[in-house]
Length: 309
Image (tube, one colour):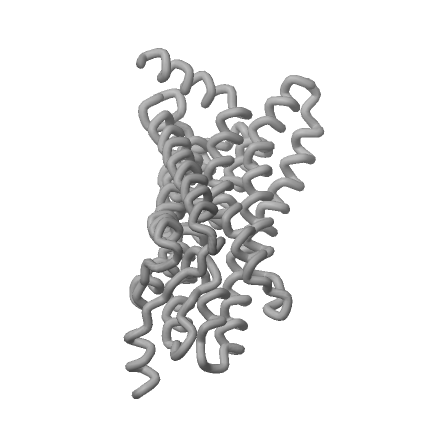
């Protein structure tokens, strides 16, 4: 009972990146610029797809939903991270607030990973079965796949978050991170966390390896189908529609695998914090840039929209 009371009263703080206030302000400005750039870039893609009828296709439906997921996922992290940066790590967060942030980050991040696998299946169907594409990828199925991504993210996030926040937190309350990341929070628990680390590894393996395997299998068939295209222009266009997705997958899965699938004995809080900056702030900026730069229809729609203003 005493441990439960202690845990209920815990207030977490995030360790500053630097003890120098000037450096903290510089990092704060950098994070703020990245956050606003991410919001504007992903919001632009979502809005352009919505208002441009020529983009009301299956591929752009998934792309717009990916952009919306990126907005919410980054927004679950950025406000508290910015508040702690400007306050030199003196902004407290309750255990309930920390658990809520953790839940939404894992929920949205998991849905993001599943959605990337769905997008790979969409490209596989479009390239390997072009004549049956609209029949196979019907709009009801697209909506179900999108909903399924959210449901799977929720089902993976909820039990893990509950499991971790049943741990007792007694003494140390400084998280060596800029948000409530699971490995960083577990390091503060004053109890045996082997079961929790195993559960985190298993769920991370499910969220990352299974979708990545499906993506890899899809692209084996996609590449084989593209190589059978006789026209050089046809091959170029087919590769162009897939290359953006491949780049996003490499960024997303590479960083998250480094954090969640590395052995706990080799986990470095400092390196974990740096890599987390990449996939929580930098990757959401790169996603709209990658898609807009490598997608002619999206670029043309964006140019038309800008001319109207």
